[in-house]
Length: 195
Image (cartoon, rainbow, N blue to C red; front, side, top):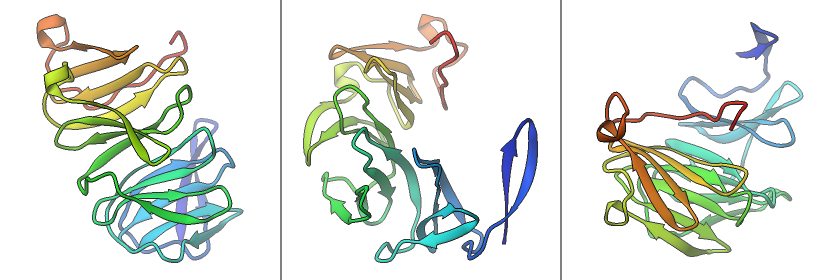
């Protein structure tokens, strides 16, 4: 099968052996340079021109991936929940009490991952437990969580239907239309070279 890679300002075709059939929903590039794919047929990665499917991971919709500072890869599987793939390849399902669409982001400062529930709410999951949790009542932007990102200093950024929320030192500030954005709905964000 064919895949494409953006390299030096151009799209280059790649010949990848054993690539799953169409239906890839999520992509992720890990520290080792592997490209992870979440598809209706399961989860796997591309390395050295070959796709390797993970055994024991059922097909289904994969909402997002994140790699924590310990090298664990986290997978938000819509039907099964939260999957952790350890650096040695061991697979474990983690129960966070949620089986909904999620957005994931690793925390480089405090460890663990941040889990943004699609229909609202944000949880910091560390060492198998919930370390912090935020909702609209705490000042988090309203509505669906579209993206979660954690900066190098530990500041958490959350794109929501109700604005862009920032969590720093446990305090939430949300920027929305009333605060100067062109609209409330924020689909995604990206940090520029000036942070």
